[in-house]
Image 1 (cartoon, rainbow, N blue to C red):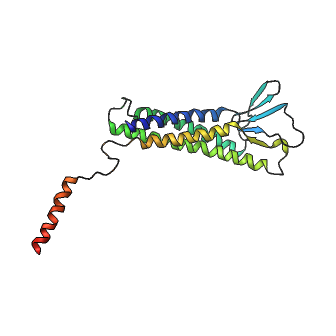
Image 2: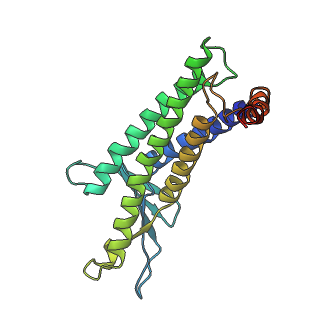
Image 3: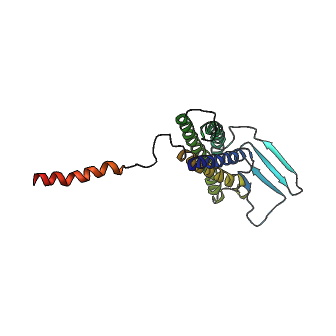
Length: 216
């Protein structure tokens, strides 16, 4: 029962991380306008994501536009697109294997096969967590580097957007959930700790002194 609970808890955490990764991929809030300098203008705020940028007006109106050219995007944004989409696809495959492999489902009859499917699912969730973590950290590093670069003009400086914090949280859920799912999927017949039989060792201990006495 303990391993089943660990499997279910890891699967739930992984699903939450998958949802977080989907929001990270779609939300246009990776980069946010930085208000620095003496003239602070809050009439509009610029949001930049992987697929579009949006401008929020002080009147409450939001205008979004999809990027015209993929080649014009910076290298970190191109890599983030590919890695996040790949992570979501891996999460979809991992979720399918996880549902088939957990002990509380009856989709697969062989216990050994169920354990293997669950372990593969956990490994895939961990890989997806790393794939989301890499572009989020890369983008955050680029934003911080440009923010403190004196050669970058103030209007072009950006701050960390909410999607980056969501990406860190989602990747952590995937890493923890995948690890729990893997740890709770021990194949049947493999003991978690070595066992020792006291019945076999006692005759040997009793026979040892008798043999010594015979030689003496």
